[in-house]
Length: 361
Image (cartoon, rainbow, N blue to C red; front, top):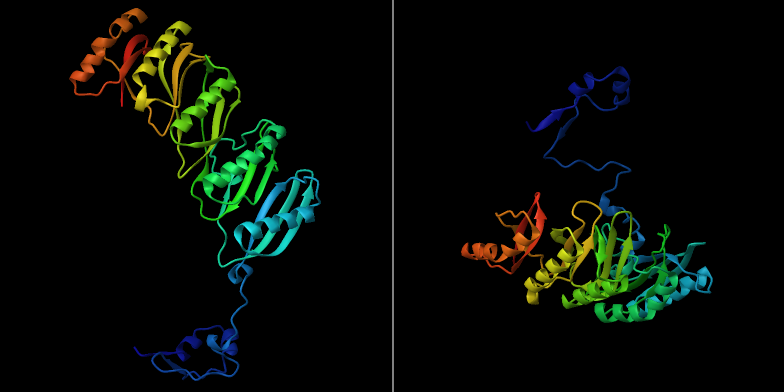
């Protein structure tokens, strides 16, 4: 059907609505394939002026910084300095440097700049940390002492000039957790990354400082450029976290290889595990930990990049630790006979008996 009769439709309307459309002729028909005559007062979209562009569409963008420390200057002066730093580092025109808020927690600043496109922000303060705290410093003094060397690390790793470098606890400070914020703009060579894991026991054989040093050394063996390694105790467990530079995020993986009854047993199995995993299979760190439940000692590993070994409990059960140790070679040979690559083995209390745990790649 080429046309639609409007008069029939008008008849179905209420009296009030019919009165409103009375000027329309009942015989008027709209032909869909015929052009309509323009009416007075109507203009095409092409005749209307274009709507005003928003600032972002005109090439104006805003860089915001929260909780920026006073550092002996007023809020407007801090904004002006930050704007100048952005203009120099990114080569953009700064149209406004605004102090938005000055409070006990620091300054909130907004730097408006003009650019062909929004600048890519690379920041240690906006790293995806998941459940882990990105604050790597236990005090403001420790954070301030790290400013210069970490700004240099940031510049070398990312290839970007730091625009802002400051210590903060943010708007919701966490006790004993200071974050060193370093902001730069552009396409980075490496990105700041945060990874972490939980320790469900008391680390044995290390002080806190030597344990953190061992973790750092292990991460650096994996090719990561490490800014900090931190352990933060909590009720029943500790949180280990690290900030490093890499192309992509590397996950930290904690593994418990064996459960033991005494510290001496744990030390013996830790030595066996280290021998088995030496070379290309070496974890970031291996250690004994004392736990609050179950068997009181565990052999634990932390891996990053290099995956944890596959640990297969042998089919034999043993009534004593000594019997398990005597059966290690036999169980390793059994797995080799199955065509498996065997790195070594440890003994562990498992399912109410001692078992040989065979380690495979």
